[in-house]
Image 1 (cartoon, rainbow, N blue to C red):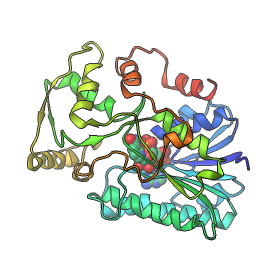
Image 2: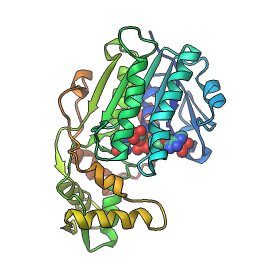
Image 3: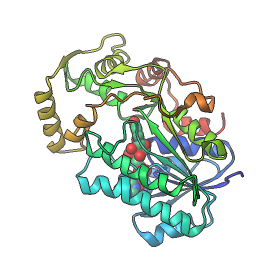
Image 4: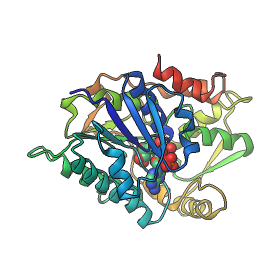
Length: 325
Ligand SMILES: NC(=O)c1ccc[n+]([C@@H]2O[C@H](COP(=O)([O-])OP(=O)(O)OC[C@H]3O[C@@H](n4cnc5c(N)ncnc54)[C@H](OP(=O)(O)O)[C@@H]3O)[C@@H](O)[C@H]2O)c1
């Protein structure tokens, strides 16, 4: 079955923009609800995309949005908050989305989780992501599926507008030395374009029903290596990353606590520190990009272009290009 009318919840975010562009490229009709219309502004010029101001935390609004859709994609996630906030965004919301899909007869749900999600995970983020997976898996129970579900678990995601490599590149413009918690934490970064392709490719593929995919890139890096790469390509100082000062864990967690309570947007929290206690790399226990015939993009190939700011094309131009390659 071709799923043509798609609701992309969380479609206004970093990954959402690319998922929506990939779906638009395939000629699908996409609705993106956002609590802040401003956040969805960059999507409205894409063909076949409708951005609506709506708060999906309201049951009646959610029911109205899923009605008549062929598929729902849930990309909502938060990195910071207390246990109540993690539970609401990562467990209660998926439960409400599943219920709304079943009530409206929507046959397909794609759900974004995270690599390392586990009920025994070291952080609220990883434990709550596991709670969300459990809710979605239950709905897609292969014995008697109420919904055809697919779950995705990416490692850290990189791309032009990411908040990971770009943040480390920006920090190195201002700081002569980077004091780094969990410098030896392992990641297997995956391109946002490959993540978006994985969503687009699996949407109509019944082999992906009731399956979980780990989305990872071609190489494993330590956090220190990634910070060095980000610094190597920063504008005006290519090839000259700042020195890194690895912090012992006690000091690293203290730094995380300081950043958690510092004014302005939260850059790091104790929960993020706890997430890094587990290697963020493919376990091999699940399917991956290779099963979808997607060749993972090397990080250096992409990052060298967008971190150095060599491309003058705006973000909107890039999304448009993704939609009409
Ligand atoms: N980025 C990564 O490296 C990475 C790695 C692994 C997993 N993931 C997962 O991938 C998903 C997307 O990540 P992202 O980086 O694209 O996130 P993002 O840029 O922060 O976007 C999050 C989206 O979720 C919505 N949202 C956030 N909190 C919400 C809430 N409490 N209620 C309703 N909507 C809410 C936002 O919509 P509004 O427009 O309404 O604000 C926004 O569209 C998340 O589930 C994340 O956990 C990301």
